[in-house]
Image (cartoon, rainbow, N blue to C red; front, side):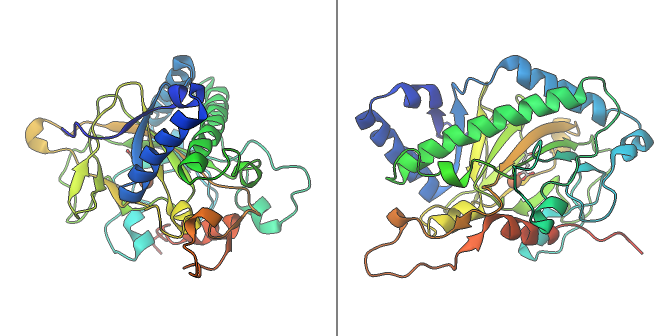
Amino acid sequence: MNADFPVFDLGAFEDADPAIKAEQGRQVDRICRETGFLAVTNHGVPAQVIESVWQAAQEFFDLPADVKQRAKAPYDGYPYGYLGPELEALAKSRGVDTPPDLKESFNGGPASAPPGMDDPEALEFCYAKTIWPDAPAGFVEAWRTYYGSMEALAARVMRVFAVALELPENHFEAFIDAPISALRALNYPRQTSAPRPGQLRAGAHTDYGSLTILLPQEGSRGLEIMAPDGNWLSVPPVPGAFVINIGDLMARWTNDRWVSTLHRVVNPPPEEGGMERRQSLAFFHQPNWHARIECLPSCLPAGKTPKYEPVLSGPYLMAKFRATTVPAAS
Ligand SMILES: O=C(O)CCC(=O)C(=O)O
Ligand SMILES: [Fe+2]
């Protein structure tokens, strides 16, 4: 048990006066320099919003395979809809060849494109239609409500990050007012046979964007992060909390002051009777398509040049995403 997994009280931060906020920001800065993983409590997302999408996702994953396939992505590399078992290997994003991950997922994007958006790649990719399942009833509404709650929560966490980086609290606002985030419901099915060598529920990877809001199944285990000493550390269940972690884009934005930590989901140990299924929800927050991500002013030591060229959020995400899709067998 990791008694020391950091827990951050978001409501208390928001109610605090500037001096306390600055002090809490320094704590968040320290966490993000070390692992970039923390649990966020007192987040204000209504239990009902979480419960509804959780239930809807569970019922969807319980449907027969052929029914789920009706919501499948229309072609390889399409970002949204149902992605069946063994179609993705996250370790490939780092050039590591493993068997496909033991999971299935349902993915959805932003509700609509912002007015004036005419970039063909953005329209074809981030703003592509979500392929909705026709069952269970209420799925779309529950999904959209949760997606909206995650957009709002991510914006609040970005305010904490701004303070942690000694920037004005609203620094990130203009970069994230038309975000191209994705919500993914994950199901790691009950394992009835032994995994292949090197096969995990989710291979070791870093996330791509600014931050991820993860909701692991209550009380579940399996998520591991790489500690600064190189050892895998299991993330303990924190009741009522979301697990927040930063992604590659935030590492880049901060000139590597913050780390986008390697993480994975391991198979349950059979000797603990742990072949059971595990569900999670992952919201991948990503700045506006056109947001130019270049070294933040507070992250560049005097006299130094930034480590990275500026990138645009959307095209950067596309390149990352395409590297992980396992091509269909021919
Ligand atoms: O299911 C989990 O706990 C983590 C999933 C994850 O890291 C991802 O999908 O990027
Ligand atoms: Fe991840």
